[in-house]
Structures are given as structure tokens and as C-alpha cells.
Image 1: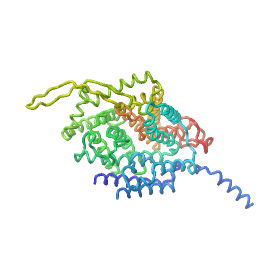
Image 2 (image 1 turned 30 degrees about the horizontal axis):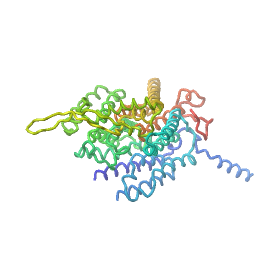
Image 3 (image 1 turned 45 degrees about the horizontal axis):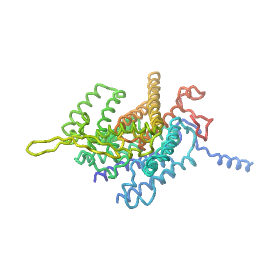
Image 4 (image 1 turned 90 degrees about the vertical axis):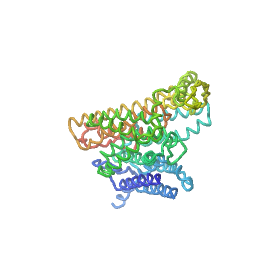
Length: 55
Length: 466
């Protein structure tokens, strides 16, 4: 019974913490740290190609 | 039922990582600390959850996560050297089978500690890791604390979730680590943003700290009592009202004595005289043996080298002859394969002088770096109080206090490679790197820094050596 209580309480809190973290933008980049989107050079290349195609 | 719950829980955590891969790092921390695969016995062993979480955490960082701000610190380099050195000593180990068995978990703990700081790029991530570590170990602490309070403790008798006496479930280890965690709990209560400080948070934290203080009572591990004393002294440095703290701690200590079980007070009484205590007297003999051992093998005997020891000593044994008559005789006792019961001698015997040197440097630098951060932000707060700096000095202090409690406790427990402590080192490296990147005096002088976190554009996409 004690084990169930300890596991239930702490696991519930950890799950709630993980859920709250998913909703926070500052998990992946600090507030005020502008332009810190993940570095994805392939997307830039794709966008450049698309822009060139439009022109 | 519990098995199915834990299985679903781990899968759920892994699923959340699909949205934000950093959650996989937290999932690995949880799995490594609580070891749900040991608690569940039917469903859990089907999947190698620890391996899955580790691979997911690493792959998530490598493939999806931004590397902006990731730095490779000097202490991570020290851990790489220590890892390589341990592999070398394992290759010439005196007991190869046992040595490779220990290597199996040591390398994972070291590799994760080397990897963890690379992911700690934001303040929230630092907090999330501290929170995940605290909540994970809280499962063991709360269970042990309630069992102790309801009379279920005793030396070697406190039954935690798993009864295999390894990792954090070993009584002296959990007694030391439970006390080391208290400064982190105190930091979360004051500076947490995932669970912002309110009455419920303070109530939970208070109960958790009380449960942590009960662990040394429940396990009757003398190391735990020593750790409580060390933490009390360390907290004197960081509490606001010192005299009030001393008075309250003294009152609590005195008030708790009548409630302590007799077996606990008797066992704690043996701290002073070790002659009649086999555990303590063989400990000293093992340490002397280790010093002799490294004279022949200064580079260390590899993991589990203590298995080579054997010594005979005299031990006074008192017999009750009945009618209040007792007789004390000196008996010759032979002991074999006695463990080190000290992380320092564990490092010396297994990894020799170079290994002990690396380990001491790793920890010594940690204490110094946290001290530097602490002083930097306390000094800055005197010059100019900024609300965004409020969490920094207290976190450095908490990490330093946790480490010092461990360093004193590990004088008498062989936990040199305890994964939880290696995670703590990882968080220290992460904090050191983060604050030096965004907020060092040099970073603040950079054009456009303006007190706000600055981004080092030159290293975008690749971790730099620092």
C-alpha cells in the first residue's frame, strides 16, 4: 500500500511536470534568445529552391 | 497491476518525447534512478527500457535538437579520460569476469553524464533535470520514509521497492543520496517554475525532506547521520537567519531522540568506538590492504580488485553465560573479499593513483566551479539586483552542497561511480557551461548582450571545446 502511494504520487507529479514542459516554449530556447530555432540547413536549401522556382 | 502501470507509464513518457525529444532525457533519468524494470517482473523485462530511453535521448539530441549553445566542458573531457582509463584497467583486471560486469553499468553512467550537459541549453532544461531527479528519487525516499515512520525500518531490514541491495536501493547509498538531494529540493521550492512555489509545493517539499531525514533512521546507516551533520553545517552558509536555523535544528534533533528506535541509537553509538564492530574494524583493515595493494599495482587492479583481499584479525566476542555473567574472549576471525566501503579507496584500489587523481580532480573542480558561480552572482546581486539572476547562485550552491554531502558520505560507502551522482556532475557541467555562455562577465561585455542571454553565433550547429 505504501509503495503504491509513493509510486502513484511521484509518478503522477513527474507526468504532470513532463506535460507542463511540453507546453513551454522556453524548454528549447530561452526567452529573449531570438532566432534559436533548430538548425535545419536542409529546410533552408529547400526554401531557397522553392523561392528560385517561384521567380 | 503495478507492472502494467509502470509499463504503460514508461511507454507514455517515451511517447511524450515525440513532441519534445528532451523528454527522452528525462525518461532516461527516471528509468535509471527508479529502475522500474526491476520493480515490474512480467511486462517490464520484455523491453530493454533503459537502452531504448538512452538511444532515444541521444538520437533525439543528435538528429532533431538544436546544438546551439551546446558546449563540451573540461570536466566532460575528464570523464572521457576516466572512461577510457577504466576500460584499460578492466582489460588487465585481476578478476576479469567481475570487472567487466561492473564495467557494464559504469560506462553507461559515465557516457550519460558526459552527454547530459550537451542537452542543457536553457534554464528550463536545467530545472527540468533537477526536478526529474528529485521526483524520481522521491519515489524511493517517500516509500522508505513512511515505512520508517510506521516502524518498518532496521539495519538491512528496510524493504524498498526492490530487495536486491544494488544501486540506489542499497541502504547506505540511499541514506547518503537522500540527504544530498535535500538542497536541490530546497532550490526547487524557491525557484521552480514548472511547479511554481505555493502552499502545496511547500507542503510536498517539507514532507519529502522529512522523509529523506528518516532514511538514515530507517536504514540505520551511520553514513546517513554523518551526512545530515555535514548538510546542517553547509546550510549555515546559505540560510538567511543562522541563529534561528541553529536553534530550530538543535530543537528538532533533541525532540526527535525519544522517537528514535532503540536499535538506531545503539547503532549510532558505535560511531565512536570501532574496535568491537566488525563492519568498522574490517573497513580499516581493507583500507590498509588497499594502500599496500597499490604499492605493487600503482595503476590499479581493475574493477572489483578488492576480491583479492583476505585478512585475519582478533575480535572480542562477549558470551552471555546466564545469571548476569558474561565472558569476553578474543577470537581470531578471517575475512575475505571485503568491499572497500569507501569511494576513495574504491578508486585507489581499482583505478590506481591515476584513476583516484582523475576522480578527485573531477569532483574538486566541481566544488570550485560552483563556488565561483555562487560568488559571481552574490557579488552581482550586491551591485545590481536583477530578478532573472535570482536562481543562479542558489542552484550553484545547492549543487555544491549536494556534492559535498556525497563526498563526505562516500568516505564510508563505495559509490564512486553512483549514476545519480554522475548525473549531478552532468548538471554542474551544464550549469557552468550555460552561465558562462549567456552570462559571464565577457559575454555581458559583448556588443548587444545588454544583460540578456547572448548567443554565440560562431559555433552554431556544433559543440565547441571549452
